[in-house]
Length: 66
Image (spheres, helix red, strand yellow):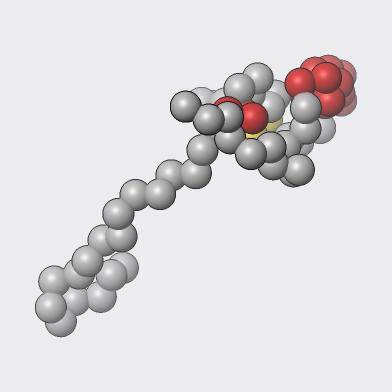
């Protein structure tokens, strides 16, 4: 298995630790939320995430997708 290409928008672990400390100190929004909708720290494994590339859905003939 190959390592995913680093995404320049994802901070490295040291920066995530600093940003998470700022979140806890100031309540800064990271763009991540816990199960209760409150701002949450960035996940430690975010640099290992991969995009969800599921199969596209097909609509029945004469039906809209949404």
